[in-house]
Image (cartoon, rainbow, N blue to C red; front, side, top):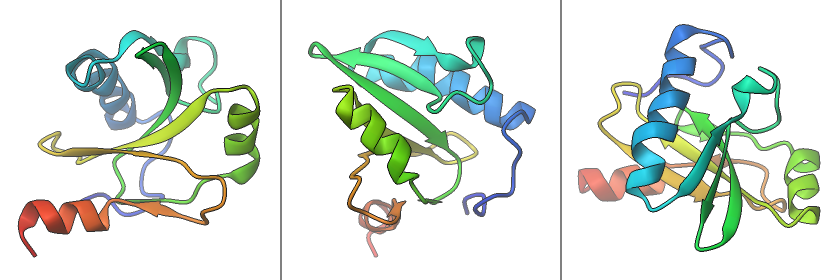
Length: 121
């Protein structure tokens, strides 16, 4: 169904392609502007993409996994800077995606509930 957690490396072609697809297709479709891929700055940058919607900047982690364990120190740093953070869960075949904001009080984030709703289960 979706790629298991930790299966791909950060610099694999499929990860890079997913980030580009999210930046060029999904985020503009969702109304985001000024989309910036951060890989141009550093492949280890804390978020994959910055984008602006309704005057508010968001930092996105793009994940082809259905589960993400946030790093609270990163999330809190961006909260302190006034930048919201989110995960863009992108199915590897790019047929389905979910955007979920991080919450620094949570220990994990997944798209299970949203996926079940879409599949009618």
